[in-house]
Amino acid sequence: MTASAQFCPLDRYLVDDLSERVLPFFGDSDLESSDISELLTNRVNSRLDKVGADLPDTYTTRNSVSGFEAYLFSLPRFVAETLSDGSDNSHLAEGLFNVFLGGGDPLRVAPAPHQIIFIACHDADTCRIKEIQPEECAIDQAIVSVRVSGIDAPEVGTYYVGRPGKEKPNPFSPKLVENTDKLRGEWLEGARLTKAETMLVNKFIAMHIDYTGGIAALIRNDLNTWNGSEGVPRTLEESQIQWIWEGEGEKTPPILCGTWQPFDIYGRRLGSFYQMYPSFLGIYLRQRLPVLMAQEGRRMLEEYKAQVRPLVQELERIRDPKVGQLLQMLGESFPDPETMFSVEKCGEIAVQYEAFIVAHGEHYMADDQILQIITGSVYGYEKYRNQDGDEYQAANDIARQNGFGFWSEPTFRTLYEINEGDLRYHPPHCPAMQSR
Image (cartoon, rainbow, N blue to C red; front, top):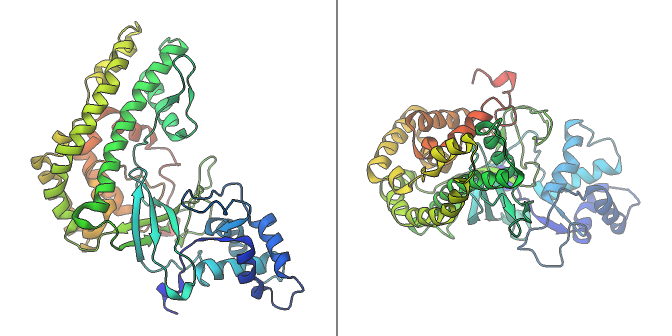
């Protein structure tokens, strides 16, 4: 098979169906299909796995196995090179990777770029796609979540939910909660606030973050649909991880340097997206983005102003001077997308984008992520570093130095400065690749 044909997009199987596919890899073993089903249920199923809402009700986390679970189960055996030790686990791992990856090795061989169709993006860095399957794979169409490599977007969501006076932290936006707490700690350290006042401040900061994330998501989704590209095949390139991160908390599983890693710890694929036509992104910057922001961006700004205005009035009653300073910094700081992405400003961004292409290669003329970074709508963090990590950092520096997009907005800029020295966001490079 060719490199692209070897790769079968990672999907989910019912346990009983999967057991029939895996059974041949047990050779002369006395195990039957029902025994394999038991192994899959008890050994491969992971509490970290989740069933997509698009799947029929017949699929559950217990009666089905996903590519993510196959990866979690089999990776340690690839690392330890124990696929040939004759154990049930080694046979199971070999079978899973032949079923899900067409015999490819996730530690050494990244699949060739392959076609996908966008469905929608939750925010600017997490999207749902439909795989276009090679005939050799004999797997049903897969709808999977992809974590875009090399970038990180402002979070969308609400900090608190519930009735007034009965609010509780929103469990669906843990990253937004974390980022809000970081900014409050940076700006209001030493402030003497009641719990109710702290909640008001949290809401205020979180609404700013959510607004910037909403604008970033608007750009990301518009890239998928403008010029009739919705439902048209696009290209996905799987990530090639270049570092080992062995820190605590949220982390990438420590694997070998310079190797393909198909998932993050949340079961999302890691990959970068590319446009079909190399000239598309330049045209998008100069022609489409100013119009989008003058229309949809303006509408989002007006909605945001209406939502935040009553909260500002409540915050004005708090006497702590640090809250007054916060209001002075953010209360009148309504980042106007029509101004940030005017025809003139997008022309400036396009000039820098075109200079970047000349400096780093025509490959990036079709790279969605470069456009997202250089517009200043997302960060170029190295946390989900891929083979283009150095170039993404260069694009991030251009946007930051020129104050493009949200780099002039305090929550966006300050959060990056807080995380700049954090190994979770900028893990160390592999020694062999530092000179790249």
